[in-house]
Structure formats: C-alpha cells, structure tokens
Amino acid sequence: MFSRIIDTIMSKKVVLAFSGGLDTSYCAKYLSEILGYDVYAVTVNTGGFSKEEEKELEKRAMDLGVKEYRCVAAQEDYYNSCVKYLIFGNVLKNNTYPLSVSAERTIQAQEIAKYAIETGVDAIAHGSTGAGNDQVRFDLIFQVMCPDVEIITPIRDLSLSREEEIEFLRSHGYDMEFHKAQYSVNKGLWGTSVGGKETLTSRNSLPEEAFPSQIKENRPSELEIEFKNGEVTAVNGEHFEHPVYAIQKIEQLASSYGVGRDIHVGDTIVGIKGRVGFEAAAASVIIKAHHLLEKHTLSKYQQMMKSQLSDWYGNWLHEALFLDPVMRNIESFLIDSQKTVSGKVFVTLHPYRFVLNGIESVHDLMSDKFGSYGEANRAWTGDDVKGYTKIVSNSLNIYHQINKANV
Image (tube, rainbow, N blue to C red; front, side):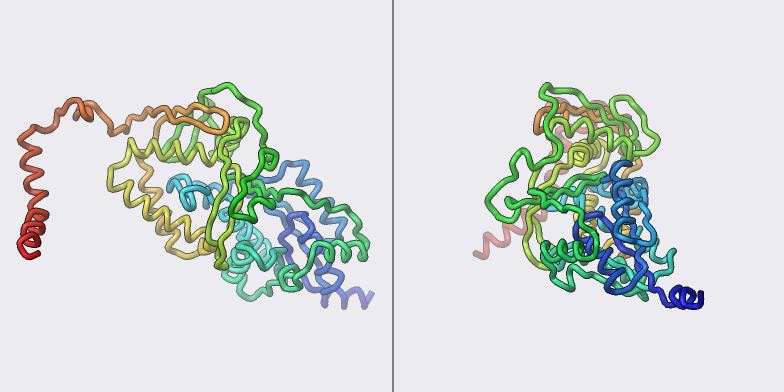
C-alpha cells in the first residue's frame, strides 16, 4: 500500500500530441517505458478524422499503454479562430496554397497546450522530426502557452529511422503492422496535403492516384454559394447553422470533380525550399468566390489594403507567429472590411476546374445608375474628365519638362 502511494507521488505526467502514426506510437511507448512518464495522449480533430477513425485512434493509444486518451473536436474553434480570416483575406501562400497544414498545426498545438495546462503535467511531447516546419509550430506555441513545462521530442532528438522505431515497438510488446504508404496524406477541414517521392524533386508532378479524392463527376454542375459578411451561410439554397458544415458540403461537391489540386513550392521556417502536393476543393472555390464578391462590393483602396495585410497574415501564420498580437490587429481590420461582403456567387464545376460566372448583391458597386464601363456615363461630363486629367498630370508634366531640359 505504502509503495503504491510513493509511486503515485513520484509519477511524472506528460501530454503527447497523438496522431496514431508510427512516430507518435513510438513516442507513447518511449515516454512511458523508457522515461517513466504517465502518458496522456490527445488527438485534435480539425476535420481529418471520422467517428470510426477516432475510435481506432483511441484503441491504438490504449493498446500502447497510455494512462488516458482524449480526442478534442476542434473543427468549429479552428474555423472561428483561423479559417474565417483566411477566407476574409483570400489568403493563398505564394498565390497557390491555402495554408491547410500551417493553420491546422497552429490550432492543434494550442488545443494540446490547453489540455496540458488543464491536466497539470510536467512535460509535453510531440512526434515531429527535425526536418520540417511542424517542430517550430508546436515548440513555439508550447513555449508561449506553457513556458514552465518541458518539451520532449524523441524522434527529433534521437534521429531515429523508421526501422528503429518499429523494432523498438516490437521489443516492447507492440507488434502492429505499420505499412509505409507510398504517399503521406494529412487531411483537414481546409485541405489535404499529399507528399511523395515526386514532391522531393523540382521536376515531377504527382500522379492521379496520389490524391485521395478521385474524380466521380464528369458533367458540369452549377454551384451557388451565399455569403453574409464574408462568411459562407448557404450552399445551393441550403442554409447551415455553422460555416464549417457549409465548407464540408462544398468540399463534398467540388472534390468529386478533382478541383483544387496543385503543388505548392515555398520557403520553410527552417530555411530550405520545399514542395508539397495538396487538394483543397472547398478552400479553392470559396476563396475565389469570396474574392469575386469583394471585387464587386469593396472600394478600390479597401481591396488594396486588404491584399497587403492578408499577405502578412498568411506569412506570419505560416512562420508560427499566430500568437503575435499584430495578428489580432489584422483580424480586426479583416472583420470590419466584411460589412458589405454579402450576396450570392454563381459557380460552374467542371473536371479539374471551376468557372466563376457572376454575383448578386444589394451591395454591388457595379451599378448602372452611375454609368456602364465603355458604354455610357451618367455621373460626369467630358469637360469634368478634361479638368481632372489636367490637374492629375500637372506634377508629371513638371517632372518631365524639367528633366528633359537638363539632360
């Protein structure tokens, strides 16, 4: 009895970010059987796991000997705290990538940190290697939110090979088969990343079979997306209680056409170039549809300022700086910019592409009350234009006349 009390007092607790793959399975065993921790495994579902997959993850975690397992449903929080602003800002990293994984890891790290604080643990662990961006995202969030909690990263620190991890698990009584998939796939609400041998080079593209959503539809179909203050509220006339469900509906419809596939080339946080394939049907369609609606409902200078701030927002999110207060400042600007971004956008889906047909909005600034571009003017005269151009050109005339005379 006394020894059990001593064991309880002496036990150390660690929260493990658990995905159920080989790396985090190794971490679960290593943390408990080598380092002597009670392991509290947590999975954050940002739209990548079904209910059946959640149950499988729980079983795997418990089979690995963790003390407790929790799956946090974070889709709505993910949208509210991050995805919403990616839509408001029309954010595409390098004009290509909707920051699917960057945003996801940031929110997952925050949820794990909250759980660590709630559980009162001594340490927090993740299974990132030393080669990519995720290690920085997890570490930085943990250091800010849990500054007094030790961060343990066995895969990174031990530089383990896949074979070494499997052998360790087998030698400690866990003999589940870990099949090395030809392509690594990370699915979430805002897109699915796809990595393979082709993305390790600068030359090759991903084959059709690499993408998890295969083409099921070949005949064009119409898609109507309704926005209110920049947020998707309805799809084809069907209204949703939260934008997450509207995003999932658009993903279901557009992914069946193979829409939203591409390869992103970018600069990693650790200073090297990297390529990753992705499919993000909903993100691709929503961002372009939202941007079209903004072009009709925002002023020229609203759009210019939004574009600049949105680029910064996307870059800082990618660089793991989500918790910097300037991000909240930009979010306030983005929210304010969406007051008139309401209306319907009409889209046609085709295999591998989509067409934006037009919009309807009571805030549409393309009103024929004031004129029709290239056809008729109702708000000015030819003399007005002559006077305007004379004043605007004055400083240019001075510059060119002075410099022409002094060449």
